[in-house]
Image (cartoon, rainbow, N blue to C red):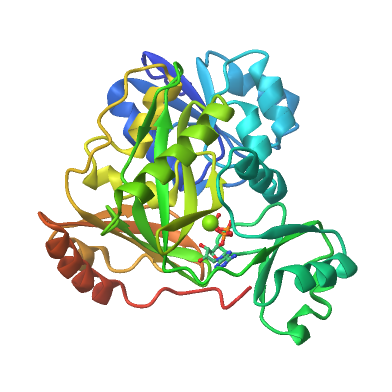
Length: 380
Ligand SMILES: Nc1ncnc2c1ncn2[C@@H]1O[C@H](COP(=O)(O)OP(=O)(O)OP(=O)(O)O)[C@@H](O)[C@H]1O
Ligand SMILES: [Mg+2]
């Protein structure tokens, strides 16, 4: 009688990864009659209480069997899952999106190559495999430029802005002497992103374009929808995401980040999963990116992606803040990830809603005052 009860559910979804994105997928899916099981090697405090957690390394065969038992579909919330594991799971249970999306997104070189092959504009870039290659690339691309590790970068980690010849000296060693790309530094007017959801039968449902503000490479704020988006910019963003999703036969939610320069969009990177710049949709859209991801991978009809409330999403970085003070702010909806505080770590976010954009902006200023400055890791 001591066994953990298994929930009665119409769909059983397995999630690779155990971070806040997994928590919010389960939060959105459970009211629809979907049950979740997670596989994550670490402690995974965010998902405690949201489904069974199989805590094991990715190459653990016993865990593989326990994880898959009774599942209808497997997805991920963390993009550095081994591609080979996704392929192996796919022999038993559908994996959505498919492993090809992981494969492309895990390597900045294949990401940029994919953008280019689809005619999606990017900033100038070159592959780097040593200090010599870096120096010739600088001669071609110029300064300032950004040196980025091809793999395992997130929240601005694994990259360095090179502004002078002195910065270039020894840069390949400093970054860890691993395969990189060098990108032209883009003096952008703003950063925007497009989150969209693709169904099994290939229909793409875009959310509106949103504007993102980063602090030291970490997303700090999303304004949804972005102000003053021309028809051309909207169409190009939607076309880029549609082409990318179609090329991967993608199922579920994906995001593409762009630099906007005038009326031009340059694709920066893709995320093959629900994305921080889509968190506003939990309270500000008719159907959230999380719910629509669950719906898509389960083969259920999608809900509308339209805006219900203009929203400003503010990340809680390094500090959870004072929940009572945040909840006392007009229009503020708090999403805590259940994570311990650490400088530079995303531990929650607040969606600030207004009946108009101006009302949301005004309320967001109040909430920003309550949150205070993000606690950053200081470049580590
Ligand atoms: N070439 C560039 N020109 C100007 N700014 C850049 C460039 N590359 C990156 N940045 C800045 O650094 C931020 C993080 O870069 P990027 O999105 O490549 O890294 P990441 O670590 O993979 O981030 P994420 O957490 O979104 O996965 C960008 O959103 C942008 O603000
Ligand atoms: Mg990014």
